[in-house]
Image: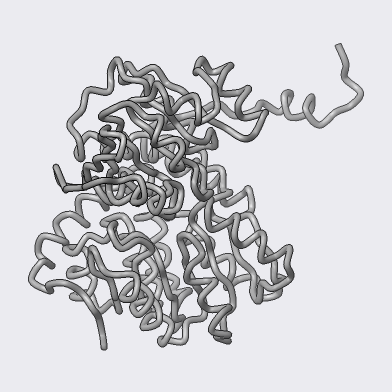
Length: 413
């Protein structure tokens, strides 16, 4: 099977939207130009498990321009844009993804990608990497990982000494998590909530579960919309930071009583549990912006639900046994990708530049050990400089005198 998609006729629409995203991704365009010239990925087989969006399509086209054979499956069943899969299939990419596919189909498509005998993996959530380990597939030179959730899993694999090849934690690059996680997640999550509900955020009590980079960005955007932001945390330093940033901080059990909108962004399971949902106000909205649909206890919600119905697209109303109504968005999956279009191309430009250069780094460094690595700072800085250039922003340079001062221990006050 060369591809498994919904409808090849959607390719025309897909190409238009991919072209629009490309116009907002100047850094990746520059990398693609060099890859095409140097053909440094010639005859390399690359398997990707990513959100199948217009931005991802531009990463895939960049890898193909470098000479690679690229195979793609979805990292989330609800984030796939079917017009993108059609356009990529027309390009000759082995794409296996359909929006709304079942859990069984999700893994079947991943197995199809792995039949290509890839040498490099590009993952988002570490499902592809963990499947390779479970299936004991050989011949992998290295992999990259896009998201916080996946990096957490991979670092545990490294600690357990079961990681069979090097992995570059792209998520840990400064030009990824400082921008993608904060500004991308912040804006796109608000976008997903508004598309699914059309609520007014101003004046609401907006609860953010977790104050990592994604939580910071989301809290900032909700505050900008006029919400009273409440942060819940298990990390004392992050909780203190949230308070110093001007937000209320309290346990989820207390926030549950007063919150209007709840968003989880922790990467952990059961952040919102049955006992929290029973305390929520009538009309409370709950959703998730973490990678997997495990942060909301959906089984617990079913146990306390008397009846349910789809009241809007991506918005399911649960009438609880206590008579109150709770609304869960996008089945508890990534609301920004399921109910909206995910991160803007302008921020994914940096994230996918990191991905492309991480593949190059793996292939240029065949002696890397079986560990989780951060992409070298010089590559991060190169991406930042290219992004600034594309935005027509110039910055100062150190003078020779300043360089001498910073390099000296003899010059004091």
